[in-house]
Length: 507
Image (cartoon, rainbow, N blue to C red; front, side):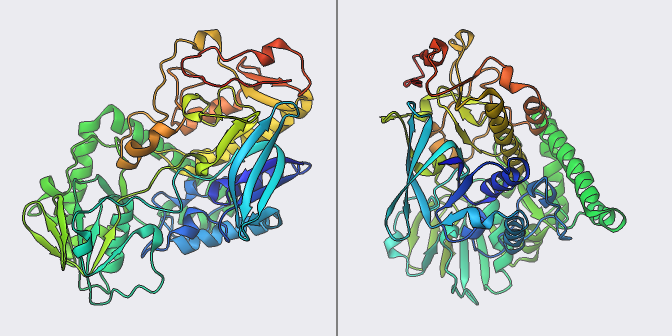
C-alpha cells in the first residue's frame, strides 16, 4: 500500500513528487499518468508557437531555478525543464505511464483509497493508498470544445482544434482562419504568418491584451552577478508582487486599467486602427484572463497586414471558408477552432465513500484543495490571476506537512468538517468574478466555495501562503483520527444537509 498516490504527471504532479522526495523521503508514493510522457498540457499541445502565458520565474517551480534567458518561453523548453526536474529529483522511476484512473473508493473501515485504473493494454489495475492527490488539471484531454458550426459539412477545407494539432500539417501558401480570441488564438496567429498566405483571426468579441518582453532584463542581469538560486528567487518575488499588485489594481480601478491596456494597443497599432471594434472588450479587465503578447508579436503581425482581425459572429461555413453574419466571406483553406476547452473535474474520475457515489459538486472546497466531509483527498487547481505553479507548490508543501502531522498524531485520516456556524453558508461557484466561456460551461460540476474562511477560495497567492504557514492543523475544521476510532465527533454527519449529500463514515 502507498502513502500517497499522485494522479497526473504534469506541472502539478511533478511538483508533488519532487516535494515528497525532498521532504518526505520515508513515504511510499507513485504517480499515475494516462499519457506516455511527462508534461501534461505541455506534452499535449503542439500547435505553432505554443508557449507559456505567464513568466517562467513564477510558472517554474519554487525549488528549481529557470535559467533560460526567455522568461516567456516555448513549449519545448518547458517540456525540457520538466524532464530535468523529474531526473534531478529521482522521480522518473515512480511514474507509471499509460495508466488512466477511472474511480476511487474510500474504505472507512481501513482508511484507504482503493483506486482503479486501466493501462494501455486495457487491463484493470487496482492500487491502495492512504492519501490521494489529484493533479490531473481542469480540462478534458480527450476532446477540446468545438461549437456546432452550421454548414460545416459544406466546407472543403480542413478544420483543426489546437488540442489535436496534426504533426504533418502543411499550411504553406494556404489561407488560414483562426476562430477565437484567447491565449491560444493570439499565440497561433503570429506563428503561422511566416508560411501562410494570409491568417485571419475571427472573434465574436475582443479580449484585453498586453505586451511584455519575452526576456526579463532584470532576471538576466541578476543571473550574471548572482548565483542562479538567488537570482531566480529575487526575480520570482519581483514578479509575484507585480502580478498581485496589477491584478488588485485592475479590480479596484477597472476604468484606469482599461485605459492603460487600450492605450498600449493603440500605441502598437497606430491611431488609425479601429481599436474600439477589435480590441475593446465588453467587460472589465480580469473578468476574463488577459492575453499576454511577448515582444508585441501578435500586434506586429496585425499592423504589418500579414494577419487580420475580424470581429463578427459566424453565420455558417461554406465551401471555401466562413460566412460572417455581416455577409463578409472569410476565405480559408484551413480553419483553426481555437474555441477553448471542455472543463473536467479531476480527470472525470468517479469517487465513492464505502461504495456510495460522491457528488463532489455539492461539497465545499476547504482552503481551495480539500473537500468537506471527504478524507485524505487533495486536489490542485491553480490560480486564474497568476501562475498555476504557485498554487501547485503550495498544495505540495501542504501535503508534506499533512503527512508529517498525521504521523505525529498517529492518525490514518484527515477530513475537513463543516462547523455549526458554517451551516448558513450560501454555496457559490468555486471561482467568483471570472467568466470566460469554458468556465461558464463547466464550473457547475466543481465543488462550491463558501462565504468565509476556510471555505473561501481566495485566488490570492500571498494570502494563501500566509494561511498555509499558520497552524491549520488546529483550526477546528480539520479532524484527525484512526480507522478504528470510536470518537463520535468523527462519525457526525455534515452540518449543512442542504448542500452536503454524503457524510464520511469512520468505523
